[in-house]
Length: 195
Image 1 (cartoon, rainbow, N blue to C red):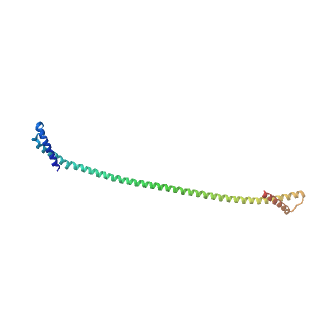
Image 2: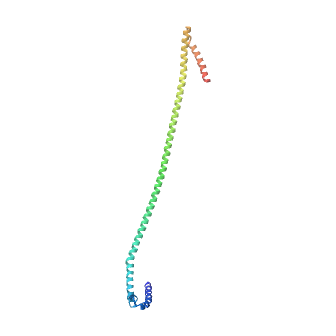
Image 3: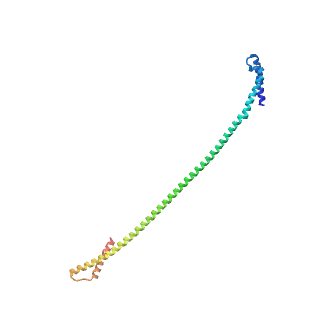
């Protein structure tokens, strides 16, 4: 069908130019005698060009285009896979980082709790130790106080007995002197308690 259209166009061109060439008589291409041979060579030339293009050049071009298209699609698939893998790795790294932060926070809290419990334990031990030492010191003070009072009473009794013996020359019973010293110590103790 295309050949018929091309042929009709050429014939109409030939008829139009025949009238013009008959008048001018100049160019041989426009001379109607050569038109048939020119048309034959035109058909042969363009036919050969069409065959070469359709059978040799265009298949190679389409094959190259198909190869490039398949390579591009393959590269796109590879790039998509790599993008998915990288997104997966990013998610894994984010998860690892989040888990590490949570674990570090837990370790910190555990260490903090351990330190606080150790501090509380040491403080309780120290308070108990101080309480025991205070109780022990108070008992020692009471014992010293009691023993010192008794020692003072005894020293006062002996000293009084020796003084009276030197003054009077006679010995008074130590029980009498001891009761007087106890009475005086009792009054002094009551005065201290009232203050």
